[in-house]
Image (cartoon, rainbow, N blue to C red; front, side, top):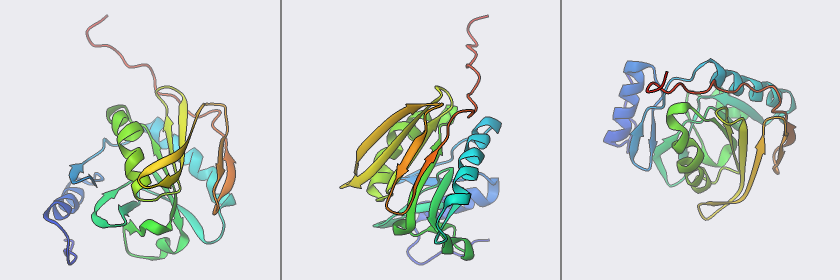
Length: 196
């Protein structure tokens, strides 16, 4: 059983208990407990493809982590868990599950069918407020991606849209590279249960 940290809210204790009981990841976004759906195969493959491209080129002081969480700098009880997080490599040597907000360079989220609005709209402001230098959203429903950069006062100043086949150019102080998107899987079209 998890020992509560000093200053931990009742909601944070509930989130940790839910994770422990179900094995699902929990997030607290702007005071609301959320439990995103379990990723499907194509969702997981997108994360793996991006991670495999990043790992060989990351500077020694950075590393990539799947399903690690980051808190808002001014509220450690409000935290998000992106699909992939690039942050200070020392995080991998800690027993913590919550990365220091100032150590995160890139958050990558792959849109799930059930949380599309959360991933593509709601979280943009959250990551900007957390001062994460880049937030990459990959959407297998449409075969598109969006890169948000330059957070300032809770808003990203730069937004670049692209489609599968176009490279995502990361031009961050800590990380400069291009990520290939050709070959990323797309979700099958949704079936409409009301039509045959």
